Structure formats: structure tokens, C-alpha cells
Image 1 (cartoon, rainbow, N blue to C red):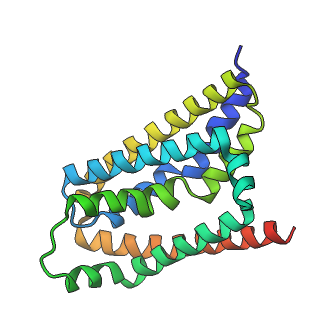
Image 2 (image 1 turned 180 degrees about the horizontal axis):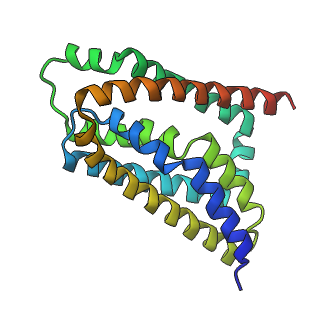
Length: 208
């Protein structure tokens, strides 16, 4: 029999760390200029990649980090620095400047795949928080059947996230150009603060 309390705890923890409502607007900013179908492809690919990453850490997380000699603190610091870089580009519109320099470059399939991997799957979905939570939860799901239940919980949470990203496409039309510009900068500041918090937590963990 599954431990209902443990499953609810895992569901709540993973949902909070991947934060579907908070990630949906950031997804809009990352996919500016893409069609609805292209955004769907990015969301689907990014969600699937994130699922496999989190599932792998649920099964082998502690062993992988231990084998590589990487601490959770170090992982948090690295993820925080990557998030801060993304936030910087969102606030100062460096991404738009880079698009202008490439002229009429279309949104290619390679571009869609690249954004789905970085920064969507890593580190926004399967970031330090989600990976850390998954590794910690895997300690409570020690048996093989328990690990399978944890993976099902991860799949359910990412299905909710995928739905939020698909809905984000409709929100984009409602916001318009001005709304997107305001939201992008606001979220950039929030993301920068989140990135700094990741680094601070990582330093504390590493020092401890």
C-alpha cells in the first residue's frame, strides 16, 4: 500500500519547486517571436527532457553526485549563476538585441530544440531546487515500487506544468507588446533575486 501522506508531501514539494504558475510567464519571455505551434514544441520537449532528468535523479541522484564529487551546494551555486545570466538578458533586452544582429534569422528547429534544453528544461524546470527536492525525496522512497511511485508523482507534476505552458500561449495574446515588456522586466528582477538566493543557499550549504 502506498503511503498517502508521503505521496502528498512529494507532490506538494515538487509542485512548489517547479512552480508552474510562476514559470508560465517566464516561458512567454523566452519564446518571444515564436508561433503557437513552435511554443507547443518547446514546451513539450522541455517538459519531457526535465522529466527524464528528474526521474534519473530520483533513481540515481545521490549516486551520480557522489560519483562526480558534486555537492548540492555546488549545484545550487551553478544553477543560480545561470539563472542570473538569463535574468540579466530579460531586464536589459539583450536577447532582443542579439536577435536584431542576426537579421532575418528565422526560428529554426535547432533554435526550438536549444531553448527547450537550455534554459527551459535546465535550469528553469529541472533546476537546483527541483533536483535537490527529488534527491531528498528519493531517500524516503527506498524500495523499487516506492521509487516508481515517486516517478509517477514527478510525471503528474510536469503534466500540470506542461498545461500551464500551453495556456501561457493564450495569455501572450492578452498581454500584448507593452504588457510583455513590463512583465519581462518585472520577472527578470524576480528571477535575478531568485538566482541570488540559489547562490546564497548554495554557499551556505557548501560552507556547512
